[in-house]
Amino acid sequence: MSNSEHKPASGAKEVLERYQSGQRALQHSRCWRAKLPGACLEGADLSHSDFLYAELSGANLRGAKLEQAQLEGADLTGANLSQANLQGALASGNFSNARLGRARLGGAVLRHAVLKNTDLTEAHLHGADLSEAVLTDVRLYGALYDTQTRWPKGFDPMTLGAIDASGDGPVQHSAPGPDHRSQDDFERLAMAEPLAEMSAQDQEALAQGDLVMPLWHQTQNARGTVKRRQVGALALGTSRLAHIDGNGTPVRAVLWSARFGTQLTAWPNQDGQIEVGVQLSVRRQDNVQRLRFKTTLPPQNVHHSVQIVQAHAGHLPAEDFARVWPWIVFHAGLHGQELRGLLRPPSQAELDSTQ
Image (cartoon, rainbow, N blue to C red):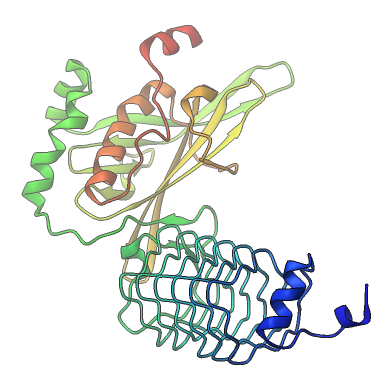
């Protein structure tokens, strides 16, 4: 490495020359008011660099390392910062129309940032300060935040599909968009698509009340013997899905008319099947209520995008999951969360083959 490569780059010209020569270690670069519109710095390490009031509109910073960088007053309109790392950066610049999908912004100071039509899909926002940021038409679906993340007063990230990752266990996934449907509208809709997918016997049972399906705790010894004990049940109704205890008392419930989030996890078991965890989450004031269960599906019935994480919950037999899942998919869709194609309930032929 030459002596010049040990020194921080100074100015737009030197940064670009070093990058174009193949150098990616550009930490502590001094680019105050630098003119870098449309520049390609993909994958560069620009941590601790000074980009105060720099012109970076349309720049390609995909996967760049910008930890502790100073971006105050910088113009990043239309820039591509997807998968970039801006942890701890001072980043109150103009990010209008910028792409920050999957960017790491933990602890970043975006207090006065302009984020108009900015894509923050699946970005990491743990501890980020957006307290006075302009968040107009921002896309936050799947973005992770926690209790240390600061938002503008009155701003609710959950309505845009952001994920509250501050609790224990799987994160809450909220569906975007406000709801203006009345309870009557939901009850009318609830009798449409998911009900039509049920057997005549199940339809008749629902007409009389909840369809109750046991949840089990299962263990398997070295000989392959499965033992199970009941740990409550799911009660499926046309207005809700409830987890009830052994006395038939609802422990927690998700109303179909209330906006809820759905989080899916999956992991392979020793029999070559996939254990799937389902969590429905509802925020009520400052509390998040979570309804959890799991089931077992063939590998081909689980989409590869489902997160590989083992969850712990009562086990719902596959035939009962086939009853419940269409209701979850349908009502999540009414609230703006698309779940179709992520899981496929077992067909009758698949159920018969496992018996």
